[in-house]
Length: 105
Image (tube, rainbow, N blue to C red; front, side):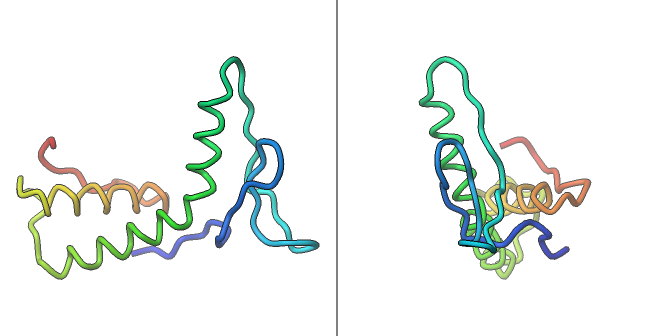
């Protein structure tokens, strides 16, 4: 698969509604979040974005393990459904289209 081109992790919360990578002069702002009304949704979005590099690595590792099982992507088996979802998420993160499709799950 295509190598990721996003800013390497770890990413962290770096102040109010800001996600960054690196420290000091090598610090890079990944994104800033804005919210209106209840801030709990913005807080949850901030946590999810900060975890993105770790989630990507976990998805790659899980997909590699499931791929060794030679699951057919068109199978309704739970392992195949999980593999299909992982591969789709990885393709979306890498901006590789079209992402794998399969039976509804």
